[in-house]
Length: 194
Image (tube, rainbow, N blue to C red; front, side, top):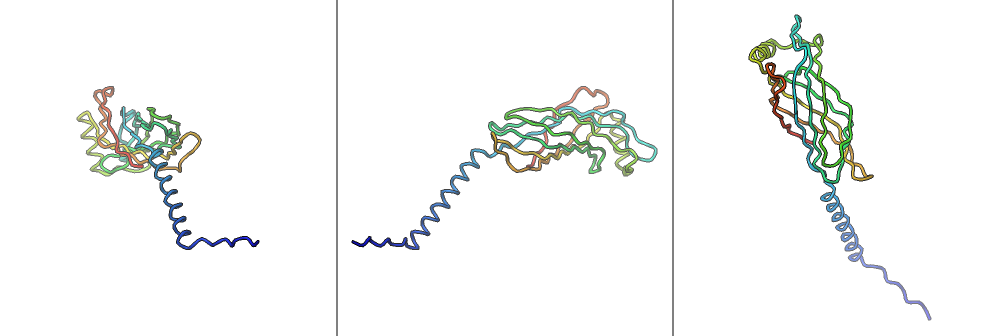
């Protein structure tokens, strides 16, 4: 007795199976994204002061800005590895000082403080005249308001799985530096973009 001939699946069945498989894969990817999607990171400036703040004869700025940054990871499952952190201090869109901080590891739902000393390079450039005059005026009044910008490379980690590297950019506007009472400071929250 001859074996019955197997019928080939129709084109419709092949197409339907392919579409169903693609929909299943897309559904699994959406579920994984919803389950593992990292929450937004929070950065703030918890303290700001100056040391050796002075203007040079050449029109530059000498001294350093002592900053304490607070990084908060609100994720319940994801830890964050900061590869490096760059900090810049600006006044009226003019770059004043900068620093590079080493990377650090942050477990889920953790808060980390990073102390940064952003040094001004007094001989690297001269400040525009209006910027220098504005800073002198604010210093005489006892309070200098600067903007702090942070750029960092991060990677999220879920157990043994790691994500690609992300660039975190944070802008901390209107950070007050009080010359009269450097110990009093109110936290300045940053606008964070990943």
